[in-house]
Length: 219
Ligand SMILES: [Zn+2]
Image (cartoon, rainbow, N blue to C red; front, side):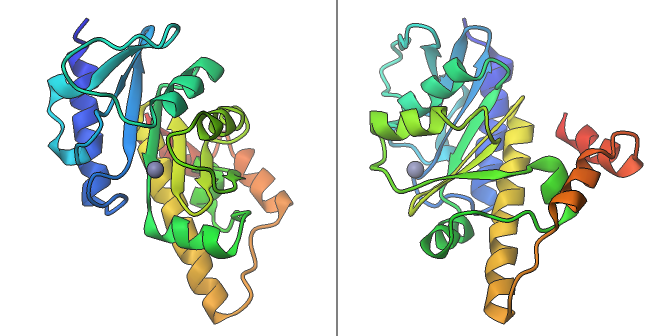
């Protein structure tokens, strides 16, 4: 099955991720689900270099890779375990954003600081450093995907999930911006995040234009 729409969408967001400076060089890997398959970046490519036909098709249930002469990303298990664990997950974006990595060198829990972060991302989970590409990292991420749509990986980077690539990509941008804001606020003084009540009030704004507009951008 070719699933060209999914492949083209992956190329589009791969380019946006690179253009936004969320990875450098061949770092990072992204995937999207189509039916019972996932499509994942191949190993050894910079994200923006991947052609539509080069995304690797992997059967989510069996892990079987359709042979096109390329190896899947070394984080294949992280993506695979994520889709198995979370049936409504349509995409996973793993990047190495500089402010997120810097944040994990000094802190663990990213507070919720501003309305877009509360509405689009919510709580961010944290996993201490684990060696990349291992079953351990894949299992640790899979254990958190139903708890939070963004997961900071200590001394490593960020994983976001979403119903689609657009949502996962926006979340990556917002978490990276949040980490940047936190670090600059902390350099200037003591950051004061939103209270739990303030976050809950934003989550409850179902009928407000603000939240509806944000959510429409995510579709
Ligand atoms: Zn990584």
